[in-house]
Amino acid sequence: MFGRLGSTRDVSESRRILTTIAELIATLSSGLFTGASIYINLVEHPARMQTGIRPALAEFAPSYHRATVTQVSLAVAGFLSALIAWRFRSDVRWLIGGGLLVSVVPFTALVILPTNKRLLDPATANDLDLAEKLLTRWGRLHAVRSVLSLASLLTFLLLLTRRRG
Image (cartoon, rainbow, N blue to C red):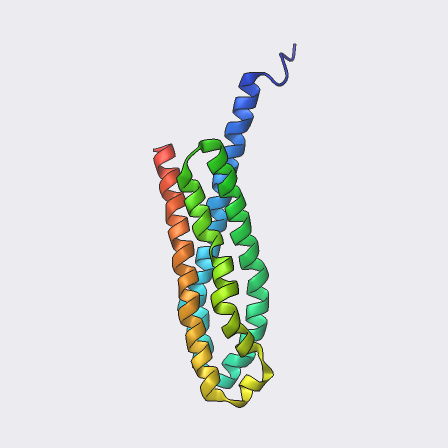
């Protein structure tokens, strides 16, 4: 009546569904990360800078802390999903796209974090010229994250388009 559970066809269908879900989660995570990152570069950070250096510096800390959890979660979820897609599709381009997305994490830790720490240091508020230089530098460094995540998103979209088209 129920047929054989665990048949080759059932396993194959389950694997296909899991792969499709992984591909979609990778693409969605990358898209959300990219959108947020580009928004920060094109809207939030320029608006922050227009308020003046002291208010921009004051706004940086809460914005930074809130964005950190969201962006790390999206980068890791996107990478892990891309890893699953790569494993089941045997298409290294999923791994490349996931690698581009998750590369923002070590880039942030190694390259941006020293600037973040200086911006979060209360002593920086006493040197507005330094604060302005650091905020400007931060904006340029953050743009690298936008480029990396956009490259990841375009890779995933290309893979989905080719697979479905």
